[in-house]
Length: 368
Image (cartoon, rainbow, N blue to C red; front, side, top):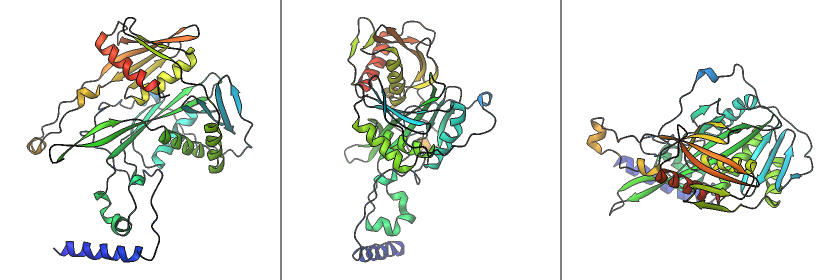
């Protein structure tokens, strides 16, 4: 009762304070106070790649500040480009990525530091493949900064929640010029209430957010030496320019493949980003062979009720879904490309699994 009375007094005090000052909301992106997601409650991908010391590169490389004047925008085909110093941003359709004139080895530590400085814990990092992924975290900036939270939120901030979690995957890939292409993809989960009285909750996937991907690319540019003003201008000019239009995508159950009306280079980039955004884990890739070696945990396999009170008390765990490995193959057919799915050993995949995977990719590719 005493605690309740104290809470009431604080609430009244908050109301009195805000009567003298205008209300100001909290907008933007802020993962500084994010809490790590509970891996028992958040579905895919439950299995993580373990770190391998064999691939650790001795030493570290810090981000170098570049203050060169912005060069005039260049275009290569239908690709829009803006750059400052050794950092460029490219765009094709709805897909953006950074091009940096440094090697993946030079960029690995600065990019890792960038995510940690933005309030994330890295759940997976693999230097060999050039992939790192954050743990699930909550964007606290989405919580309204009302009078009560502004006054006593520091002590009771855990009582506030957005009901959403975010995760980011970063892929560093060597380009033809010897520099690095940096791709950032977002995955989201949302809390869904169930039951007659909405007394139960579960996590379900929500659509990836291109705006969050753009914001993280903007922040990453600044981390790599681009000033805030120039990063804003580069992203703004890039948004105003016209990139390549989305290609036609045809899915055929007869051939068991996706038909993309685009050349191999663009198809390879887009399929790689789509794999990142749809829950696949790329364990290796061979661009010369057009092959992504992926691990996949279907959401249906992990959509399960958490253990009850007695189960948690006596250590009962929900059954873990075992990941399945596949090869996603991108093949060139002149001005077009074909995307197929093979088993881990290179054989034709089961039609049911193949069709499900290709449909997932096709839906996401339509948005890029």
